[in-house]
Image 1 (cartoon, helix red, strand yellow):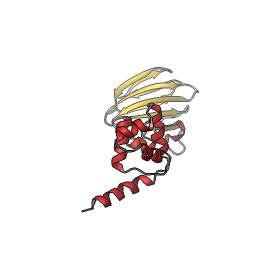
Image 2 (cartoon, one colour; image 1 turned 180 degrees about the horizontal axis):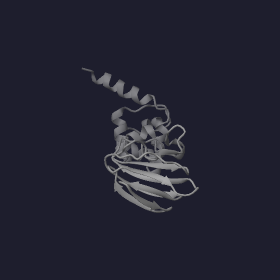
Image 3 (cartoon, rainbow, N blue to C red; image 1 turned 90 degrees about the vertical axis):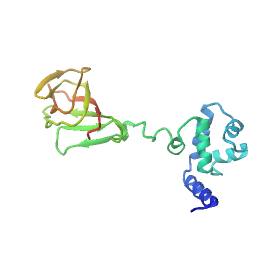
Image 4 (tube, rainbow, N blue to C red; image 1 turned 180 degrees about the vertical axis):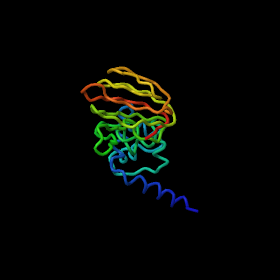
Length: 195
């Protein structure tokens, strides 16, 4: 069993690896209009220690970080990851692409991953694209962002124009095809994730 001193050292080592931790604490504190003294009092540390943490000179223990996060009313992970890489925001350039070799269609994962209860994808279809029908557990809601498509669900064709949407049981075989000569884009919310 580890001693208290060993545990404190392990906590400190884990925090020392993040060079921007102090800057994030400062940003969150400033957004909330808290002074160094005000946040330090809420956390139970000295103003000078908190100032040293924000400047990257001192490194708090995990327990102190938990107290800082609680005082700032944010999850602890935001102190390490920041807002941009926290599993919530997905920037356009960071999306995962799913392309089939030489196929005239592609999928782009809009949601952060497929580890949650829902996923969102954008399907891009070029004229002549004829992806095979697929079926999977769950439900799907699709919205045509661009172009005109025919969505075949369970053998029934539904013509959808830009701005039209459809909600269906994803257990039925379904596929989308372009009508006309313009590329189409369809965004779909799928639950549970199927990719």
